[in-house]
Image (cartoon, rainbow, N blue to C red; front, side, top):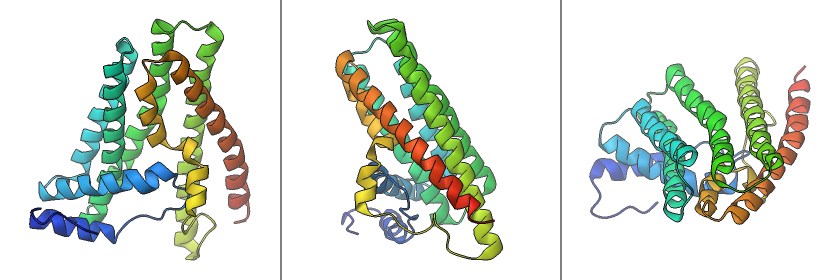
Amino acid sequence: MSTRAGAPPMYRQALLDLGGSQKTSKGAPAYSRYVNRRLGRYLAAAAYARGMTPNQVTFLSAVCTFSAILLLALHTPELWTGLVIAVLLALGYALDSADGQLARLTGTGSPAGEWLDHVVDAVKIATLHVAVLLCWWQHYDVGDLWLLVPLLFQSVVTVQFFAMILTDQLRRGRRRDHGTLLQGDGNSSPLYALTVLPTDFGLMCLLFVLLWLPPAFITVYTLLALANTAFLVLALGKWYREVRAWN
């Protein structure tokens, strides 16, 4: 990895160390894998150089994310609001990656830190699509049936998040008890990362650039909702078969 010649030594060394301690790319969509983790690495190195803790980075992530969600729910959709929402959500997402990277770098990871990170993610997932619904209801000229789309999206991502976290926890327990490589371990191919891109939260962040153009935003948002629904149906079957095979 290349670093700026004038970068502070702590920052440069942190970047080098982080480059060799990345998580597995198994199941990671393209934006998360190729963009967000890199942004998170730079932010984690900067946080390390400033002496910040992983929980402080998690707090900054929450501030960015929930500021965007409040702006979405309470303000009239305009070009500038869409841009600000997209930037805040993307920054919050990058910081969400940075807190875990900082914890691995400093060896300060803890169950409490992991709990806090997951709770912030859960609140984000539970509120973002409610904010979309409020935005459509207040400012978009759509029929009542269209309001079911954000409700569908919220239901899908909530179930997906819970099932994914539960499956991961069961894998950890299985790996700890048996010490074997499981189906969910390893890395995914670049083609897979592109195939599941519609499920990527990073893509959702970028979508809000279209917020001031209701027909475009509604169309792309609805397509993403349908894609995530299809993914969830397939993923639940796959995860169940994987867990059942451990019997």
